[in-house]
Length: 86
Ligand code: SF4
Ligand code: SF4
Image (cartoon, protein in one colour):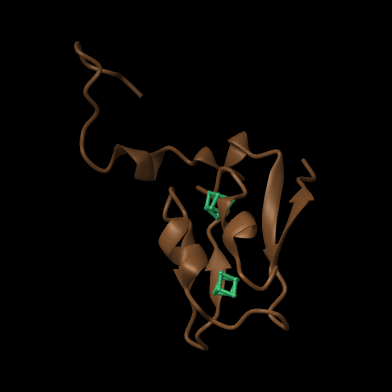
């Protein structure tokens, strides 16, 4: 990617930069514990959590950076951070 003078990037540029490769740990759902409260979706700073048709959610591992906020804030401990296999 070319960054113009001043360091301003074009809108939407993050969509072409798949930042999931930065991850060390990845979040994994335990759907048996999830109560579909949506908190993880709301708090993810990378908007890497997508709703599914059944009301549960799924991670977009192309962009999830593994920060762990979703796992820390889930009221039901329904998200586990597991070591990424590369
Ligand atoms: S925060 Fe936890 S309980 Fe709420 S939707 Fe996400 S995984 Fe499910
Ligand atoms: S680990 Fe961080 S970036 Fe990945 S889904 Fe959870 S809150 Fe979003």
